[in-house]
Image 1 (cartoon, rainbow, N blue to C red):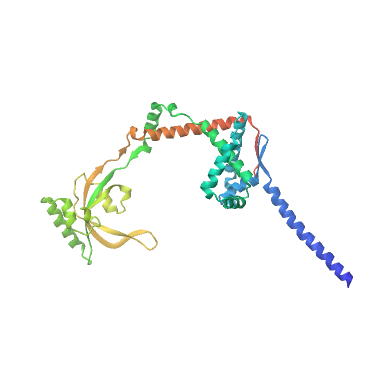
Image 2 (cartoon, rainbow, N blue to C red):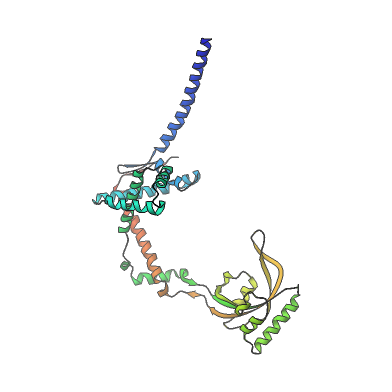
Length: 337
């Protein structure tokens, strides 16, 4: 009996040993993957675990991690190169400044709840020391970026005018119209001839001297009737859903009143699309105000162009600066397949 028990115990031991070995190998494999060096910047290494953690915090899928790994590694390299350049200049961030930023984030992001703060860091796999290190690197990187910015004075008026002329499409303005309307809807299934008769009667009254605004207050079922038919805003062609209303509206001169015309009423379908309701209405439109398509004046967009040129100069300057840093540094990238 003792021999049988010993045999079973030995077999159980072998099974457990094999089971633990398999799980240890899987665990060890995960450790190797996470600790795999994906980049070296001078003496500083970047592991796959660092990159994966950054992407995991953004809730990336496995496919997104694979597709955007290069982008995150490049960003990490740029940051490390900037920090190296900062250190080589003999500069340092005072501990008091880091502590101030640390406390500011604690208050702003966690309402000064230190337990919530610690729990959040733990959920992200960060220690407080690592978080402080991240803050320091962000401050340094931001400082080095700011030193690359160009002054507004470097952007001459000639450059602004040249950009304005060669990129005229970016400053186009659409033609717009402010409309007044009188609309006769089918209340009891009236035929279009009856609605057209009502429309022509009102038009004749306007021609006889009644103002469009007074006629709009007294006639029809327009939702703008209480405002003398006035839409209240300037609209471009792409802001008018009805093809017929759009066509008539943009054929009118300022102050001109249209003849009565038939419009197929649109409605929102159960699936969310817009389509014909099967009902009609008769409209009269007045172009209260018309502005033609054109181009914004240079003075109106000068500041916008200056900001764009400054941004382009900064980006180019920053790329050139990083290229010089990379040329002088030892950088090697080996992403996992």
